[in-house]
Image (cartoon, rainbow, N blue to C red; front, side, top):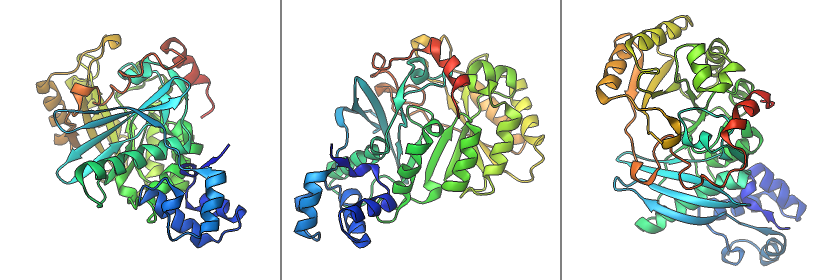
Amino acid sequence: MKVNLLDFDLENLAAYCQTLGEKRFRATQLFRWIHQAGACDFDGMTDLAKSFRDKLKTQACICPPNVISRKSSADGTIKWLFDVGNGDAIETVFIAEADRGTLCVSSQAGCPMGCLFCATGHQGFSRNLKTSEIVAQLWCAEHDLRQHIHTRERVITNVVMMGMGEPLQNYRELLPALRVMLDDHAYGLSRRRVTVSTSGVLPKMDALGRDCPVALAVSLHAPNDTLRSHLMPLNLKYPLADLLSACLRYLEHAPRDFVTFEYCMLDGVNDQDKDAHELVALIRAQGHPGAWCKFNLIPFNSFAASNLRGSSVERIKAFASILNNAGLITTIRKTRGGDISAACGLLAGDVQDRTRVKLRMARRQVLDQEA
């Protein structure tokens, strides 16, 4: 079987090239061809020796997953559905704004976390993605977008690991993918512009801070353990006190001086004034000076299996006002891509029959899985 070069960060690519008898600078040239030029044909890599190209053609490939579909929203959001084999598919979303282009990337086929408000979690879990499958989402999207708008300039300025799956439960494959995103010979994204979102896998939060500190977003969604454990079964393993301590530890390494807390607004569940005041008390109880966190309130995007409703616009604004007035920086996320099921929490509509482990098993798996 041929080696897929999308699986390698630069260090691993250099090591692989050494096994072919090539020097490190050849790996750097090859890395640029793959990621900066979007090349997948070795014959076109004209500054590589023909002998090297011939070796690559027999032993390696640049093999992204096949695109099943590409959908465009009325608001300009684009969603790709990728076939990753064995009946599994993953989704990737590009959100264009005036000052940035953000790609939302998946880390797993399905999700084992079983959060009640997430469509992906309701579909269950199939498997972790390989590094090549994570990187390929950026590789495909970047060069597809350049082709469509006829530019050689970088289109994607930000990456958020907020697609399907819990990134930190796929840490081994995630880490080299992040290094590819950050590498100046590839996409050259700054650590501040790459965000890993997690529901709170504490040991891997600590590892990420040591190994590759990028921006961190934490799915909070509740002001107390009772409610959060109901909404997010992982909280039974890593309760709020431990989670917030881990967030403060991460700040020692983070490229930003704050952690973002994601908070999905659920009508009558977690959106009352008392919930907002309890959140304020929770953050203040940490005793950390300054604005060490920011809240991102997310309008809930309803789906049939959830039996939940989103908070009204007025309720979300009132909730945000309480947090802001207490000195907690709070924003309300603008919903994008809802007409193509690309909005937050909806990344499952096109893959609902492709995962193998259903929701009734997800809660048990979250608690039993080694973090």
